[in-house]
Image (cartoon, rainbow, N blue to C red; front, top):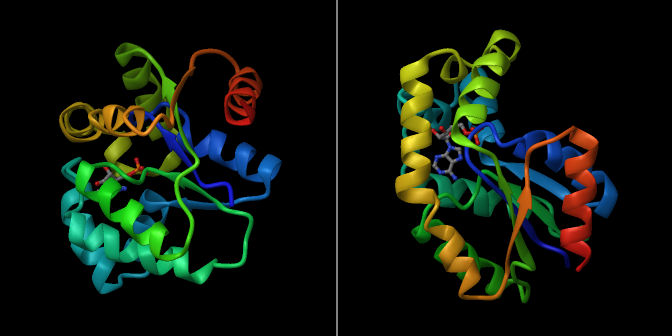
Length: 189
Ligand code: AMP
């Protein structure tokens, strides 16, 4: 199996690039943000829990997120592998994912990290907010909080995967196609 983590701060282009990479390598794309939004739209219990955190730009608690992710993985056991987008976001989530995949006799193959400057991120998110309908993309303070959460809780995962020799950084500035090419090259290496 090829199990990839597409990593990067909010606005780095993880969702856009996940769609391309999923097609290229024939993977199942799991975006925890998309799953939470689906649950909010359908007003499930999980959606109601997640909304309170998402509206503030905070991370949803690990226990809730890990349980949801594991049940999604279990729904797609027969594929070539997964592209995880927006998960893991904390060291506790990464540890849980490692343990969970080990029980399935598989593991993370690689983390590919999109690198984009902070100013560019804020601009991209505000631009996306005009069309995405996402409330968390439309408010400067929420955006600031999401980037702060990323720097505080999520960025340390680079070290986590570097220590496993699974980390690769990719320049996330440029056209969508240029970045896809760079990602495919990095994944193939
Ligand atoms: P995203 O679509 O990846 O930008 O995620 C939107 C929001 O969903 C985040 O700001 C968090 O509130 C929540 N979220 C998504 N994935 C996770 C995760 N792995 N852990 C905790 N919260 C998450």
